[in-house]
Amino acid sequence: MKKIEAIVRPSKLEPLKEALLKFGIKGLTVSEVHGCGNQLGWKEYFRGSEVIVNMRPKVKFEIITADESVEELTKVIINTAKTGEVGDGKIFVYPVEEVIRIRTEESGEVAI
Image 1: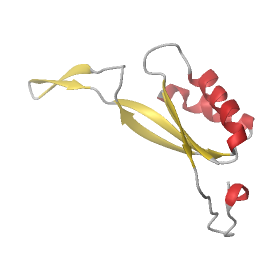
Image 2 (image 1 turned 45 degrees about the horizontal axis):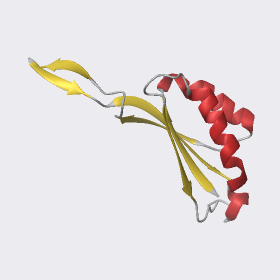
Image 3 (image 1 turned 90 degrees about the vertical axis):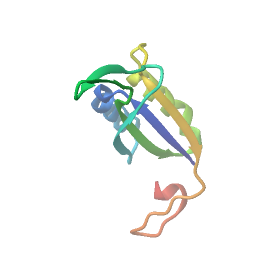
Image 4 (image 1 turned 120 degrees about the horizontal axis):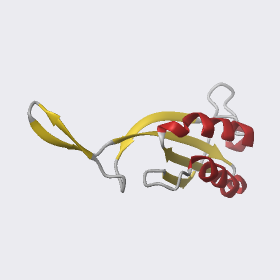
């Protein structure tokens, strides 16, 4: 099993959610996050002082999936979230040792 984290533009929230559900994802977690990278920041003034703001709003999708779905799932994310501009986001893939559904105590891929 793998955990896929995709950090994307807020404007891609609904299109990506729809694409993932169409792909067959049965569960996901979405969080509002802030971060910085190549997109850099901008200047604002706070109480008369110039402040560089470099934390951009983003949306983070977290999905647990079977190993064999990772490549196809990342393609869905890329094709939906990509604009070709700086700030499109990142995808991270992590190994998952175990998943346990609390309600039924099922474990492994059946608990996803």
